[in-house]
Image (cartoon, rainbow, N blue to C red; front, side, top):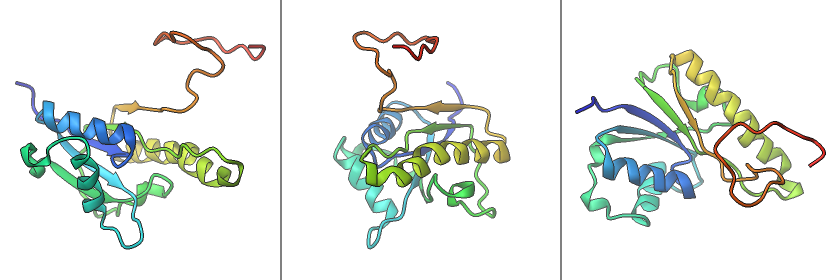
Length: 158
């Protein structure tokens, strides 16, 4: 049996991140460090477990394998204090803003673009060698139908 990995998961209270967290907890022995943004009057740990309870029976999960970390991908070091001694083997980056209304442009760029840059910077500082980047928005450009999992040469005329 493989040694359990320590996985940093962003976006764990979102749609895909929540399902990924539940999947990892149900089907592996890996440990989860879930980065959750603070919300006014809502505990980050409670928000995470509320999300997971919408997906699966949390009474059957080993909660000792989960550490909810208050933070934000839009912040340097993800808002994680330098004194935190995390030993992360890989990152699953699912955090994103999916509201693309014009008046939300700054928030979208801050989270989706700068957030990825901050995650990569944190990984470099911590010596984390692997990222799994998950996105649900506009990943196929103007393509339609079956989209292969392969590099596609950009053509600005399509």
